[in-house]
Length: 466
Image (tube, rainbow, N blue to C red):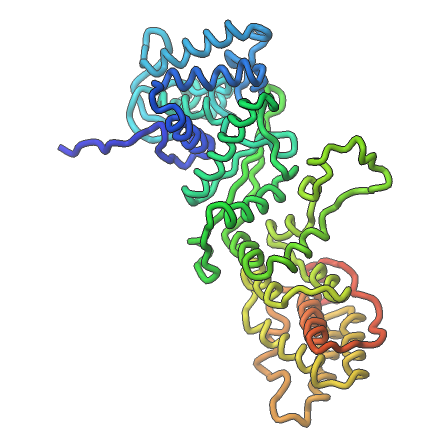
């Protein structure tokens, strides 16, 4: 007979983000209170929610024994009812709490299960929504450990832009770091009597919060990433932005992919100063003339509390060549390796495309006269179609005709205009490389016309493709 593995289901990862965060919180609480029994730990948490946070748990537990109107202003009654409910569950008292033998929906193991409703778990349908569950059960049937983990979960949560948010990774070290930090800061605030409720993240929106965690992960837990590791093996971060309000249920998932994590981490490690200068310059700080700085809290005036389109585009895998080009045109330093890495990791561009464009850029910046360099940049700036870019390249090929090595070979053409990429994106990358070479050579150019417009490099009309 095969013995059942000894598993602590109060902490065992399950794949359910809310339950898993609750598991890390339970692990933290158990270490902090090693002499306490499970019901005593539950009571410690209940007192925080009811007394310290003044029963303001509506985003988590709808119509619960903490948030229901009948318990409003009655902390003693709320605490008694909450403690009694979880004691009965932990004691597995079927005569007091409806239960049955079955399989837990979250852990998958056969045990005593209970109906999980919105009053005890996050975003769980019950009652009139029971048709969403198998066999028309009265809600999701889960074990006592899952219910307890969901109850303590809020201590591992942070508020981002007005709503609770949990951040979960595919790496347990990172999960433990994030949750333990939230727990510790909640207890620190309670000890100093300076905070009632969830702590607020420095960032006010999900994108800013996720990228701030990348920086923290590299600094605080000394995470070592491998830029050459396949994306399926790298670290990804998921931020669940949610609310369990009775009339305001919400759940939005924001994902920082492994490729985006690797790209951002690489930039912070290798090119920290110039990369952060670029990022910080793009926070949308608003109209300072209209802002009364005397009445603006310091945390709301910090850059991280404002939107940043660069971070949003990295998360979505969008094109950034226009922003990179604008930065280069203004004479600001951004190593071309950053652009190459972005195109390869985030945009899935073939390395050979970048090699060809880099070779053309070196010719324009280093082997052409000042007049010819100015003309080449001007032609590329004023291009309105793929054909215009092709003509500009042909003129460069003609300038190179007396050199032994060909500037563009026949097999290079397919990489200059690869399938899936617009001609504007290719043109912008070429111009970025040219400006970098000019900067390194300390060369100046004449009037090259206006910067190309910011039309989406991938949104090509039929005429664009001609």
